Each structure stands twice: as C-alpha cells, then as structure tokens.
Length: 337
Ligand code: AFP
Image 1 (cartoon, rainbow, N blue to C red):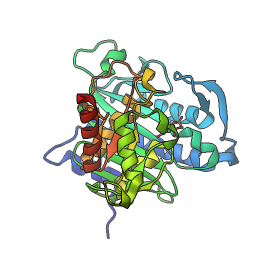
Image 2 (image 1 turned 120 degrees about the vertical axis):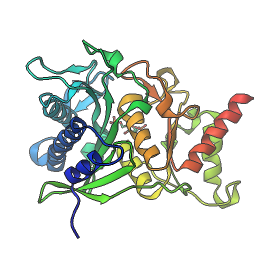
Image 3 (image 1 turned 135 degrees about the vertical axis):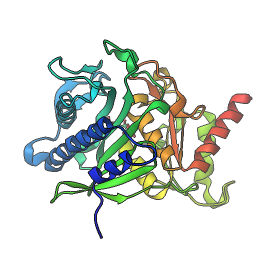
C-alpha cells in the first residue's frame, strides 16, 4: 500500500475545502524536521554525554537539562530564516525570540515547549516536544508578549512529538488529529494514525496521586469514586497510569482513551496551576478537542482562557469527553454551594 508522508498529507490539506496556507505548511515541515534532529539527540542519550543537567536554570527557575538547551536551540535555529514567522516563544525563554533583521518576517507566531517531561530523560522514559501556532495580530510592528496572548481557540495548528519506542508526530491544523511515525531509515514521517478519535468513555485515569491531600473537594470526590471501583457509585473498576511526561500521558489517552488531570490544588493555587497554558495546555487541548475529546480547567474550556502572561499556568483536565464533563459538573456543583 502507498505510504502517505507528512508532505503529501499537508499538500492534500492545501487542496482541501479547509485549505491551509503554503507558509503554514512550510512552518509545520520545518518544525517536523527540527523534531527529527531532536529525536536523534534524545536517542543517543549518554553515548553523546547528553544526559544530566546543563548547569543553568530556565525562566521558571527549573534546572535545565542538557537536552532542554539543545532542543530549544534546534527549534529556534530551524525556524528563524524561513520567512514564515513573526516571532517565537519558548518555555525555556523569558520573552519572545524575535526573527533577526537579516531574515524576512512572516505572519505566524510559533510557541513551543522544546522538551516536555525532561525530568524523565535521565531514566530513559518518554519525553516530547509540544508546539502551537498562532497568527500574529494584524498591524503588529514590534512583536512583544502581547501579540502571543490569544485564547487557544485562535490556534491555527498544534502538535507534539513523542520520543518513545518509536518517534511520533501528532498534529492538528483544525481538521482532525492525525499521527505520523518516523521511519528512521528513510527519515520520513509516515501517516500511521489518520483521524484519531478518543473514546467517549474510559476506565483509565492519570493524576499525580501524591498530591491528593491538596486537591479541591470536586477532584477528591471524582478520584475517590474511581478508586472505589465496582463497590462505589461508578460500579466499575478503573486503572491508573502516570508517566509524569504530559506528552506520553496525553498520547496514551489519544491511543486508547482516558482522563488526565493536573488540577488546581492548595500547593499550586498561588501559581494558578502547574501546567503552562501557552506551551502545554492550549496545544494539547486543541489536539484533544480535534480528536473528539474535551479539555477544561475544571471551570472553563481551556481553549477559551484569555492568557494574561506568556508563562501563565492553568489547571488541566482533558481526555474522554464523558469523564471531563463529569469533573466539570462536580466543580460546578461544589462552586454553587
Ligand atoms: P518537566 O518537564 O519539568 O519534567 O515537567 C513535566 C510536566 O510539566 C508535565 O509534562 C507532567 O505532566 C508534569 O509536569 C509532571 O508533574 P509531576 O512532577 O508533579 O508529576
């Protein structure tokens, strides 16, 4: 059977009834190419001496891994010269990275988390790259943070790469969610998971249960009911998984259903949550919604949150629609008391 590559897939999108612009196609291909290089570096691990800390902290005050720094540089360098971007924002950088004056500027903004779940690198567990594409607001002359502060609903594309047993790229341009597997010998992205659909119901949940004592009552209630299994109100057993790499946890949910929660709790309330709205929550929410799932803060659709800062954090509940809706209903009930 003929294989559909990422390039073919994107050209077909250009010819579809919801056509994508040629510069958006270029942008996605450039990101996909950078991701291939990141995959090679991640795969080499300690052979190339790439495990461990870089000896620097990022803007979040977190110790950067060597691979965080390399992945960030690869994405910045790959995207600065093509003429498709107005600017970039990275989870690793304090402010936007502007396109050098020697290169032409384009109409898109690229936002990325170069290596998500990087605390897992040293133990050889899956990590990933997450990206989101926005349009630069018309009439913007000098791009600053405010150009990026658009609700996730305005994303024109989002995707992630998961560096697991195989490297996969999962992508949406607003017409479904599609998965490509990297054929390492040929260096090609092959469409292996067209039109991914998340089952509406599930028997699997993902949460960092060590924080249970800090959760709000609606989350305590929801998880408590799942843990009671057949003897509880849900009258069925649920299983739990937690990789602590959002990309890997979300990828599992896209593959076989489930719900992922990183809720607001007494420990992260001061920061507004744990996960970053622009780099993690928005792109994943877009991908999940396009796959028929739902994504909420518990109180609002993630894609409707008006960002107030590049590094803003939010609570995240996403995955199988019926389960997310139940969590939202529990929050509404608790808040109405
Ligand atoms: P790192 O990139 O610092 O490893 O953080 C990963 C992450 O942002 C997300 O990918 C995980 O879902 C979450 O944090 C894990 O958080 P816990 O350490 O609380 O389990």
